[in-house]
Length: 460
Image (cartoon, rainbow, N blue to C red; front, side):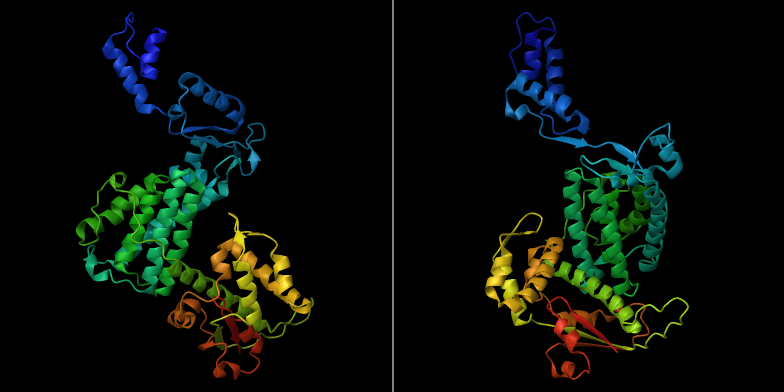
C-alpha cells in the first residue's frame, strides 16, 4: 500500500499507476471508508478531551483540510461512581456489569445506568434505584395486564367508537404528545436520564391522575395510545421488558382490533417511532398543572384548617381536638388587583434569559412606579412572580388572566380535586368579587389572595 493507494481510499484520489493492489480491492476499501465517514458521533471520556480528542480533530484537519470531513459531534461522559462513592476493590465498593445483571436483572440495570446521569458529571449507579426499578417494572407489567383486561374484556374492540375524547382524554393525549417530542429530542442529544424522566416517570404520574379523574374507567383508545407510545419510547432502554409486554398484552389486542390507526408488528423493534397526533396544546398543559397544584393546595389548606393555626402542644400536654371541617369554598379571580396588574405589566416589558431570569434593572422600574410605602409590597409580589417565572417560564408567571374558565374547570373536576376527602360535605366555587362570596363570614383574606390561575381556599 503506497501513499497513492491511501489517497485513493481516503481522499477520492486517482488510482496510482504503480499500485499493485487490485482495483476491486481498492474500491471495496473506499466504499467501506465512505460508508462510515464523515464521522457522525464519537463517544469518549472527559479525561481525553485535552489530549486524544484534541489530537483527533487536529489529525482530521491535517489529513483532509476539509470542513465536511471533520467529526460532526463528540460526546464525552464522566466517570462511574457507585452509590456516590468512587469504585474501589480494596474498599469493597465495586460492581461489574455482570454483578449488576446477576443481582438486579438486565432491565433494572439498564434503567439505573440511564438514570445515573449524562454529560461530564460523574454518573452515579445507585443500588437503591436498581432495587426500586425491579418493583416498578413488576408493578407496571401487572398494571398493563389488568387494565387491558378490564378496559377491553373481549380482547378486541373497534376503536372508532372511542375517538371522541373528553377533557381528561385530551389532557392525557396532550401529555403523551409532549412526552414523544421531548423524549425524541433527548434521545438525539444522548440524555437518557431526561428520556426516563419525560417518557417514563412523568407519564406514569400523569396516567395516575387520569385514572383518578376518570374514576378508574379508561377510554380504550387513550389506554392503548398511551401504552403504544410509552412502550416504544422506553424500548431502547429496557428492551426485554418492553418486548415482553408488547408481545403478551398489547400486540394481541391491537392485532385483533379495528380502527386504531396504526399497523402493528409482533416484533416491537419493527414498530415505527411514535408520532404526535397534534401540536403541543399549552392550554391543556396549563389545565393539568392547574388541577394538580390546586389539588395539592386543597390538602395543605385542609390540614392547616383542622389545626386552626394552633402550635404543637408542649411535651406531656394533651393535644386539643382537631376542628371539624366539612365545607370548602374555592374562590377564583378573573383579574389581579390593580397594583399587581401594574407590576406584571412592568415586568412584561423586560427580556428573560435562557434560564428564565429577568434581564435588566426591574427593581428600579418598580420603585419608580410606586410610592415608597407601596414599593415594598410590590417588590414582594414581584419576587414571588419571578420565582414562578424561573420554574415555569415568563408567560406562565406574567399573564394577566387565566387561559381557561377556572370555575368551570374546578366544577368539572371536584371528584379529582377532593379525592379521598369524604369529610368535605360541601364544595362551592365562587368568583371572589361576587356578593355571595363577600357574604361568607371571615373570608376576606382568602378572597383577597385569589388571583388568575391561583384559586384561594376557605374551609369552615
